[in-house]
Amino acid sequence: MHRAGELRKEPTPAERKLWVYLRGDKLNGVSFRRQHAIGNYIPDFVSIKKKLIIELDGSQHLEQAEYDAERSKYFESLGYKVIRFWNNQVENDINGVIRAIEFALSN
Image (cartoon, rainbow, N blue to C red; front, side, top):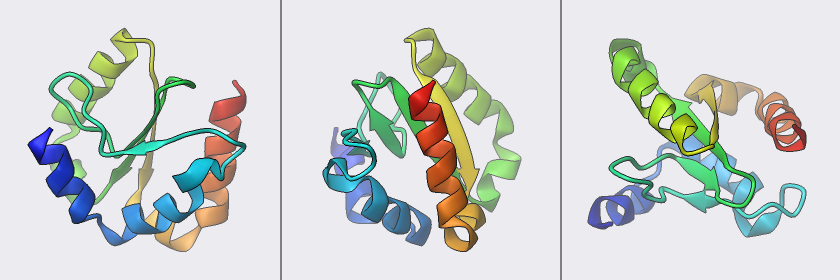
């Protein structure tokens, strides 16, 4: 859990921006946690109740596609749905990102 705490203290600009929309059950009354450990992994955002994980990817993820796929497979094996956004999507089209999250929550 120590690493999750460190990550919560140093969010990326995109994580900080999206968290404004997710915190305090603001999005359709759904509770999200930020940097919450699940097994050996720490997803960016998770709704335990809705079994939805939101991951934000920066350019470093271009080189770690295999690792990201492994993480997603693990989460999916636990019944979670994983959706991913690029940081620049959050920065440049937050409304589109929020609509996509709302759609994922409704399915």
